[in-house]
Image (cartoon, rainbow, N blue to C red):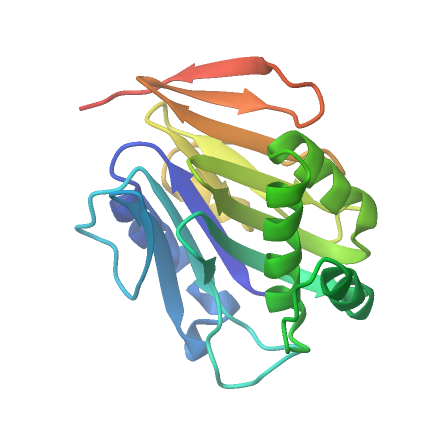
Length: 228
C-alpha cells in the first residue's frame, strides 16, 4: 500500500514534510515526493519544507503494479490538476477506451496515470467538481483512495467498500488527509475516517476552509483557520 497525504491551509509545505516520516514505510524505498500549488502553478518537489504554499500533496510509493523502480506520483497534469492515489483501478482498460472516445490517447498501462487523465477530463468536461467527481465515482471499479488538487480545491475520494484507508484530520490550522491515522494522531490532530463512497471537496477560502459534498452544490461545513 502506498502512503498518500495532503494538507490544505497555511504552511502546507511544512506540514506535508512533517507527515512524511510516519508514512515513509509505505514505500520510502522508492522515493517520497510532493507537489504544491505555488503562485498559481503546481510544482513537483523532493522537499517542500520551506515552500510558501497553502495546498500540498505527498506520496511514498510501494510498487504492486505498473512500472517498478520508477516514482511516478504525485502525477501533475498542466497547472490545474495533480493526484496521489493508493489502490488498484480494475477497469483502467475501459477508462482508456473512454478517454479515446473523448479524443485523449494516454499511451500507458499504468492505472494511476490513466486515472489522473480520466479524472481531469471529467472535471473539465462535466461542468466542474459536482458533475466530474460524481461521474468519476460512478464509473470507477476497484479499491482505491484518491487525493487530488483541482485548481484551488482539494478533492478526496474513497471507494464504497473502504478497501483502502483514508482519514481527515485537523489541528485548527487547516485540513490534513492521510492514508494512516497514526500520522494525524502524532501531530495532535482530531480525525475521522473518510466516509465510504462519498466524495468530498475542500475549498480554500479567505480565513477559512469550506467543505462541499459534490452533488449538493452547497457549503455544509466551514472550519476557521489561523492565517498567522
